[in-house]
Amino acid sequence: MSVLASLARAYGRLPDAPPFGFSQEKIGFLISLNADGSVASFTDLREGEGAKRRPRMIPVPQPVKRTAGIAPNFLWDKTSYVLGVTAGEGKRTGEEHAAFVERHEKAMAGLDDEGLRALLAFLAAWSADQFVERPSERLAGGHGLDAAPSSAAGRKRRRPGPSSSASRAIGCAT
Image 1: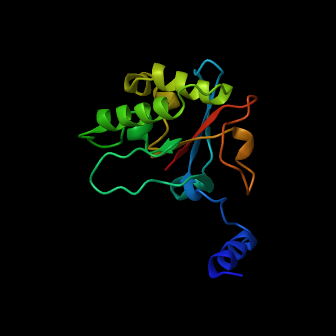
Image 2 (image 1 turned 45 degrees about the horizontal axis):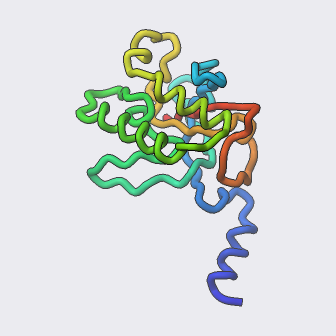
């Protein structure tokens, strides 16, 4: 058996290892979407109480390597990329959001999945002004989103691919 094959088998035995192509990231909020891309609800996934609330570690598609350029993650990212908003003075928030939308429009062009269509409809209809207009639904400083079926959140192993047609959700990290 080769060294690479041995490493792959050893990785497969790790109890909490994310599936290949995924990594564990801090997700603090879940945004559930209706089939038309409108927001169905916001759910706080953070654990703990008061100022000690911490986001959950959830498997998401592996993040891109960032230096100084704009590079959106696939199906999740900071709120500046996904929603076009940030807690501070974002100098390039609009550019980051546009890059996120463009990446998903290109990657999902021609796909016929209800969950992915809902995400694209959400991104097409979303504007940063909506975040400001609905302060009771703010993501309280969330720093990222993960588009995944809500039913997959509790699974330890999940194959990459389109979401189920029964559920549509976006998760937010803090």
